[in-house]
Amino acid sequence: MLNSVLQYLGSTAFAHFTVGNLIMFAVAGALLYIAIVKEAEPLLLIPIAFGIILANIPPDVTGILNPPSGHTPGGLLWYIQQGLYWGVYPPLIFFGIGALTDFSFMLSSPITIFLGAAAQVGIFVTFWVAKLFGFTMKQAASIAIIGGADGPTSIYTASRFAPELLSMIAVAAYSYIALIPVLQPMVSKILTTREERKIRMKPPRPVSKLERVLFPIITTIAVAMLVPKALPLVGMLMFGNLLREAGVVKRLVEAASRYILDTVTILLMVAVGSTARADVFLRPSSLKIFGLGAFAFVVALSSGILFAKLMNLFLKDKVNPLIGAAGVSAVPDSARVAQRIAMEVDPSNHILMHAMGPNVAGVIGSAVAAGVFLSIIS
Image (cartoon, helix red, strand yellow):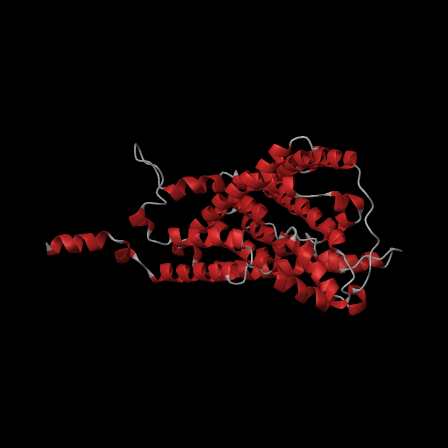
């Protein structure tokens, strides 16, 4: 009887538990606290945190991460992870985002496209800094995309270039996206004066339906011709947007923007969390990645603001530099933060619509930057 009890205890997860598993439980707890108590990106951080918990109950016992073998099926999380490693989830996320996104703010003021492009400087600067820290070119490119504040693109690039760093890159990317309400005001207030934050901009011009319908078609063709590797992301983003702007397929728009987007987001976030096993995540390189991620964010925010100030040297109608920080791809969070900062100095100054221009341009910009890396490095 005693032997049976000891044999049973040896087969439980307790017998295989490590200090690393406890640390990862603490990481999951921190993410849950940020998501639930602070209400920062709960749709993303809660599934990631639960995926971390599932993967760090010793998988040797649960079998939840086991690949299929012979006639034995694989574990649940193994199948969920395949959409991550095959690069299926991020383009589907972009499909849903496209169905939700209104590009008319950018089309009404095309100059804001340059602000979205300027914010991508953070990606390329971080790439070279990561190289100096000893990462390979593929790893450096994957880490650098964090600066675009674009989680799906970070995951897509890492799944192709550096799957061994995927969990750290994904958690870093979404953690810093959740911290935009903290990081963006700090950088914006350091780099702008009170008078600059008061700048009022002219109302955006109306955008015709023809412009809105042609934009996703022309953008898809142009990006595919120039940066073919960006097509899976940009193409699906533009397809979703075309459904939205066509105005005759409301059921498909609802499916893309709600059912597909929500379902794939859950699967993607759980898959990301499940890659954060203690033996993979708890390495010295993780601290480097989190540090480089913070650096990339700060450079991206700064470059957008500074480029807006540079533009004001030549423009008759000045732009509020705060919208430059919205050039990162966190739609619509960074645009809303820019609006909040502007209203702190002038409650009647509404720049949200203007900030949405570089914000949505940044989504395209980060995907194109990833396509450039995928084309050149591979």
